[in-house]
Image (tube, rainbow, N blue to C red):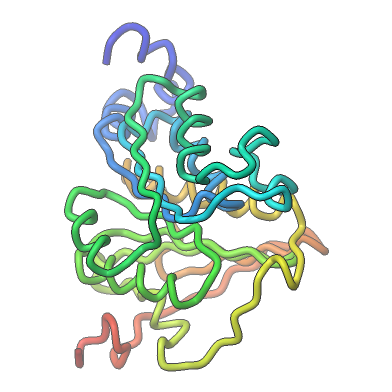
Length: 250
C-alpha cells in the first residue's frame, strides 16, 4: 500500500484481525454485487469504503421515485437512470481509487458462469426466489462464496453459503427449488426503510469477513432481524445430502 492508502484505511490497520495483510487482501479482491436496490445500496458503499479493489455491480432496472424511500445510492437526479450506472457514480464519489464495473442486465446462468471464475465473493441483493436460486446454483457450480440477504416489510435475514466448506449448506438446502413460493414484492407488501440498510450492511460485513478470513461468518447459520421488536434471532442450518443443487447424491 502507498502512503495515501495507509492513511485512508488506517482505522482498519489498527484492528488486529485485519491489519496490513487483511487490507491488502481487500484491495486485491473482486466482489460481485447482484442488485443495486435497497440491499445493494447499503452493501456496496461499505465494500467500496472498506477498500475492496474491484466491485462489479449488476442490475437490469432503472431508478424510480418509489425507490428513493430506501435505496440510498440513488437520488432524485437519478430517476430514469440505470441503477447500475447510478450506483457506480455514487461509489466512485465515495472511493475513486477502486475499480467499479457495471453490468446492466439480469443475472443468467451463462453470464454468472462467465463472471464467477474471477470473483471472490458474491452478494445476492435481489428480491425474488427464482433469481436467488439461479445465483446459488452458479455459486455452487463455481465454488464461490455467497452472502445472501433478504428484506420485506419489517423482517430481514442474512446468511453465508460457502461451497468451499464441505459442511456448508447452500440456499437450496433451506428453500428447495422444487417448492412453489408465492413471489411478493415491496410494491405490494411495503418495506420499512432502514431494514434494507441494516441487512445490506450485515451482508457487507459478512463479505469482508469471508474475504479476510477472520471471525465466524454466518456459515451454517441464518440471522433473523425483526424490525418491530428489534429482536435478533439465529437458527442453525445444515447441509442437505439430498439437496438437488449441492447434495452428495447429485
